[in-house]
Amino acid sequence: MSHSTPHTDKPTACLALADGTLFFGRGFGATGQTVAELVFNTAMTGYQEIMTDPSYAGQVVTFTFPHIGNTGVTDEDDETAQPVAAGMVVKWDPTEPSNWRATSELTEWLLSKGRIGIGGLDTRRLTRAIRQQGAPHVALAHNPDGVFDIEALVAAARAWRGLEGLDLARDVTCAQSYRWDEMRWAWPDGYTKRTGDGLRVVAVDFGAKRNILRCLASAGCDVTVLPATATAADVLALNPEGVFLSNGPGDPAATGEYAVDMIKGVLAADIPIFGICLGHQMLALALGGKTIKMNHGHHGANHPVKDYDTNKVEITSMNHGFTVDAQTLPAGVRETHVSLFDGSNCGIALTGKPVFSVQYHPEASPGPQDSYYLFDRFAEAMKARRST
Image 1 (cartoon, rainbow, N blue to C red):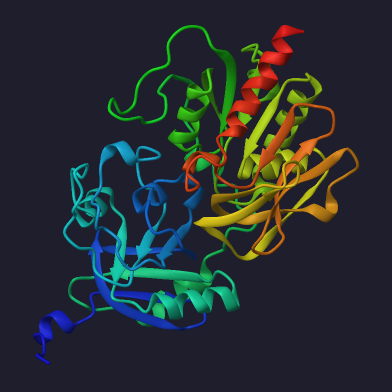
Image 2: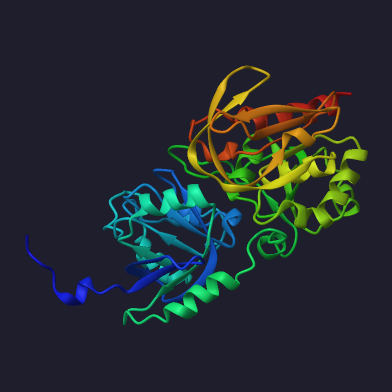
């Protein structure tokens, strides 16, 4: 076996856990340091969508699949304008991209976007540690010189306050309202625009992914997006036929301190409501339920979820570190979906009303179309209300 030169063997990046555990590897992308919560994602594809998903604010993502970077990157796959995840951890260094849609390499993209990557780590060992001990607080540093102040890195990880009690929706929401008319990607034309009159939907942006908005447009919705801090009066002033509550990062109880009042105001107006992820959790809070922090959360594209109404199982994409405690749901609010991995809540509905939400991401299409019915259900509820 030939030995590589000492220069390439020298670690250029370090991942320091708050308990003092250290992982050394090869840095790529931006240089510098970041502090965050460490989670793992089991998806085999979609690393660009994951890095640009606003729900990953305050998190460094360990990818359990070793081939990251092999399809390159393309602007078409961004879920928001800039990456939101703090950094990425991979087993093997990103390779040359091989995909007809690629317009750039992952390493170049991360560098241009100011995000740090570290390769060459034992991601299985790291994933086991996260599963057993919970999502740790970490400091990730990339220095081409290979010089690290280990004590300072561990201290930074220990000093980070964590996601509990943290409202991050304010950081990732839109600055002002806007209209959305782009529909889902379809061969051969790619993204096309919705035309004509549609169902008036107000989407409240707690960190919305673009593909959710595309799915709403494809279901016939005329979408207006409002910032996370919108009040019930702001929402109802647009005379919506339905209100959508988006996904997003952070602690639902913290964001709920202002969002729950808005949701209660919309509930009182008797308008169809559909929520995803953080929107699901805050709808549960508005209806009287409670949310709790999970040990290591659900992050992946292979999560089986059972629909109690149909007894069907959907293969879903998930990304959440908090969950609705089904034991706290009041009378009149029923559990509609459950995770077949751990039995955690994955959906609720208000009895007798077109108000429902799910914990997973129906727009992310791992099934691939197992969950699109939710957007159609929302549209049908609005049409039924319109006809009466």
